[in-house]
Image (cartoon, rainbow over all chains, first blue to last red):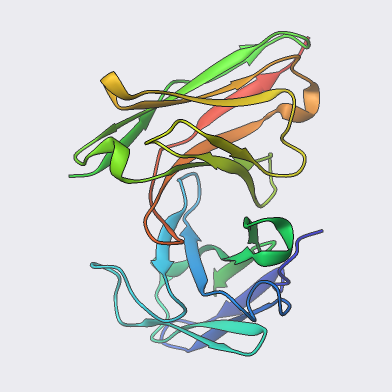
Amino acid sequence: QSVLTQPPSASGTPGQRVTISCSGSSSNIGSNTVNWYQQLPGTAPKLLIYSNNQRPSGVPDRFSGSKSGTSASLAISGLQSEDEADYYCAAWDDSLNGNVVFGGGTKLTVL
Amino acid sequence: QVQLVQSGSELKKPGASVKVSCKASGYTFTSYAMNWVRQAPGQGLEWMGWINTNTGNPTYAQGFTGRFVFSLDTSVSTAYLQISSLKAEDTAVYYCAREQIRDFDYWGQGTLVTVSS
């Protein structure tokens, strides 16, 4: 059971906007920044969003992140077939001596 | 460009040991911490811990103490993960990941370790 809670699955049709939630607690999301990783099938994870809402160079602006209190969200607008992947949220957790905690992951299907 | 290249897949018997390498290039190795992440088959990501590439001091997450050892060879910009007394439940893909500022900005391609008799 993961410390951060994500829905196991999400779906949308091309062009739609989808959001993926990530729920935590005061010791992790509530007091630290949230990062999001995208894992395409059979590949290593890739940093998608850092510091709650920052995109690394090369990540399309269709991807956006937000955080409020002890929850965070990843939004994908203009959904494309190549967005089909697993998405993970992550944050440091102050109650675990600085451990990193991940969400269980959300499998996004583009219908 | 930054690259983390890991060693190839391993097939080991229960009780054996394995050492996974992660060779960094394209940046100053000692300027960034290195983290290790495990992904069991069909499962999510699990943080194993990190190693300070300046001091060599490792920090292990709960559940990864005792049989897991992080080490470095800074002369060849390489981090290592050694797992001893392997068990079937250690079967997983192991990733190294460079830590930027509280995020993992570059990842190795992953090393599959299979433990089977």
